[in-house]
Image 1 (cartoon, rainbow, N blue to C red):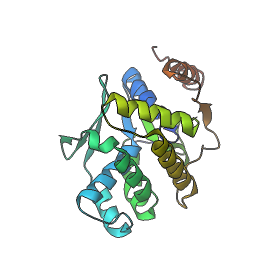
Image 2: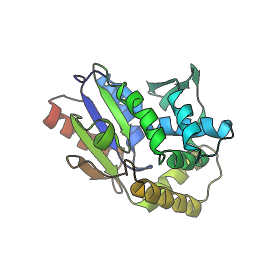
Image 3: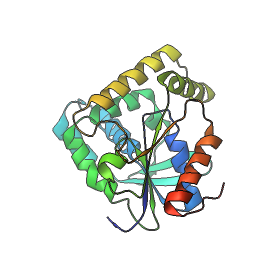
Image 4: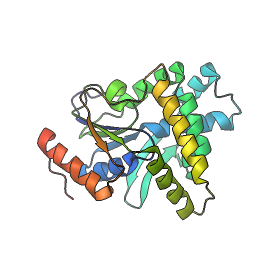
Amino acid sequence: MNSQAPVITVDGPSGVGKGTLCQWLALRLGWHLLDSGALYRLTALAALRRNLALQDETHVALVAAALDIEFIPDPDNLVRIRLDGTEIGDALRSETTGNAASQVAALPAVRTALLERQRNFRQAPGLIADGRDMGTVVFPDADLKLFLTASAGKRADRRYKQLIEKGVDANLDILAKEIAERDERDAQRAVAPLKPAADAEVLDTTLLGIAGVRAWTRALISQRLKIRVIP
């Protein structure tokens, strides 16, 4: 890890706009991008494909330790992800994978296996780190820590619209239930629970569009890091 490279962390639950904001920031600043949620999704997906029980902490942690991953900011996509040199498709963003990721993320051995790998993404000229414990655990010395939140209902609605636009059948009530359960699991886990860092800047995006979130972020980066982000 290059401890001198600046880091901006963006934490929060699913459906608050973290991925969209981090993708935009990485492209605007020309910095590296870490989608930590994808690491857990990839671990869960690999474990499921190997027919491992998600509670099998030892073997799931071995899967996590062996992942070969690259994140590529792309103006036309949220983010392109390569696993062992091959791009991963929509399976990574499915609700099944997301729920499985939340389960493996609660395993201490898995979090330990992925911790140093996440820190190794910190390279010049800088890093945008997207996740749930980026500012509290992975990069506690980050130059700027952001935490986005939104009501569970709003987040379920956003996810529902995303799935429908992709031609995927979805049930809004089921999505809302799954999001609430995932929130509870993430907030109550013994290791690295989902919560804002004490020095994080918190923004509720329930009533904000992308433009509003970007304006808030640009202002903070200008004030705190003295860096101008082009709109």
